[in-house]
Length: 485
Image (cartoon, rainbow, N blue to C red; front, side, top):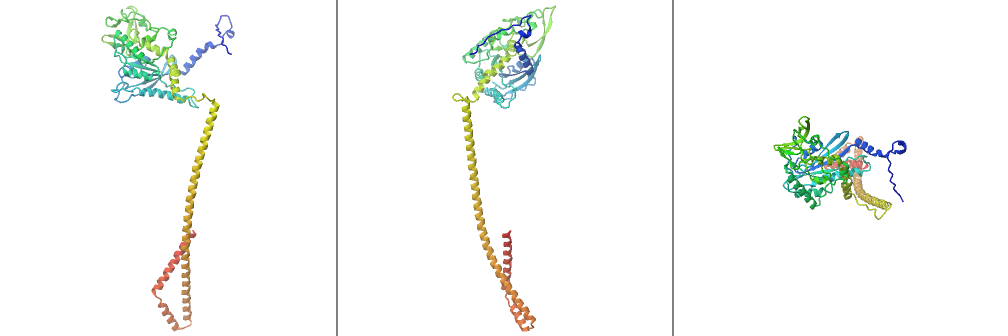
């Protein structure tokens, strides 16, 4: 039986550090140094219809020119949603952030928007699949590049009514795969009363359709300091006029309040934001102590909207919630919840519930050996079949060669008999010629004459027959040479 005893140690003055101080209180510093060394990886996806200010929002959120608004090309008319990702390396006070921004141009811009969210779902699952493939490698990298989508900011058009069917279908399809935070784009187009009713309608629609959003940590309100305000927000006077109480020219804002954001950020959902990269210098303080401060604003004929003013919109609360307070929690929720759900859906189920691992391993080994033996037998049978077929072809070829050899021998024997006959005839002819020569030598003129007459009386057909026989003789000799070769 194990027991856990809680011991709390505090450093007291006058006691030796070696006796009283162990050192595990320095763990947060070690984590801090490791984070500074390795940096952070974060992937942010923005989804919404064209013209809702997604690129301006990204530039405003990170105070950097992530998207060049002047060079943005108009979206071509296509039948599918396009996925675009860009990676940036940001640094702030020696803290490095590798930021990947994923944009979805074309979403919701078609006549038929049915299932236009499927390319987005596929992109998120593909990033999970890439990470799982790297994680399950035998020889894997000690630090796997994390391209999983950690947050999806969904832009809702400021219609003033509620969620459309496309909004509901999209969030239902992605709520089990990624952290979702809805925002109302271009909130400065709605009156405060309209904006309040619009937010309430959106949250009611989400509850009716069982849509799950990103849940803020329970202890976040206790740990986080109140949202910082710009110096001009803490000073109520700008050129003798209160900025927070005036949104229009000379007309006070109904809900003007420069207090800090509510402790419960869920009350601000969905965040009503305004984005702008236009910077303007304003005077802060009284007439005698006025100082200039640079703020991001959107200017209209009827007034000016300050992006960093919580009385005008929720951008500061959203930025602090994402980056300042919950960025690490968003990464952890993606890793521990959404990625684990993906692994559970795609990895094979555990089959060791009834059998121990060693028995299962033995069965798998036996199965592999049986499969290897079966494969060997099949290959051996195939080899023997090929050998038998080749031997049969060789036997047929040998029989054909024997038959041909017999025929050649028969022809050769006939040629040999003919050759012997021709030789005998030639010998007889030579013998007759010798007799004629001997009779000439004896001086018998009559005999010579009679012999010459007999010789001249030889018919031409006999001469032709003799030539043919000689020709057959030479043909038989050549055939004999070819056979011997």
